Image 1 (spheres, helix red, strand yellow):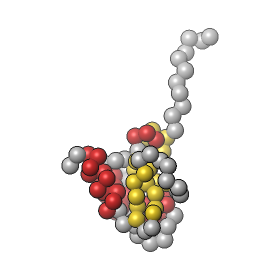
Image 2 (cartoon, helix red, strand yellow; image 1 turned 90 degrees about the horizontal axis):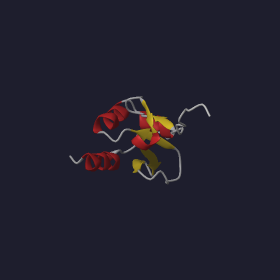
Image 3 (tube, helix red, strand yellow; image 1 turned 90 degrees about the vertical axis):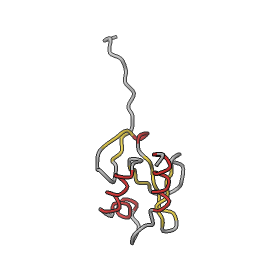
Image 4 (cartoon, rainbow, N blue to C red; image 1 turned 135 degrees about the vertical axis):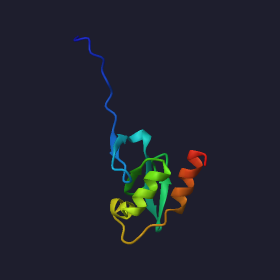
Amino acid sequence: MSGRTRTRARPERTCVGCRERAVKSELLRTVAVEGECAPDPRGTLPGRGAYVHPAPVCVDQAVRRKAFPRALRVPGPLDVKALRHYVEQAQGC
């Protein structure tokens, strides 16, 4: 043995808002459901997912850059009210 401690590989994803890479567990997965961008905290909803930091700043940046429709590959804009509400509740605002 070389004496090195084995570090576990942890999957990383890129936040669609700030474009920074982070560990998957630190990001919130979102999916497109019937024309709206819905939060998927457990990561079990079907379909393509986009990851964002659970912070209002990152959500606002993603909306401004139109990143959610692009990342989720849907035509037209998505309603992000449910996502904003979820993030605000998680932040305790």
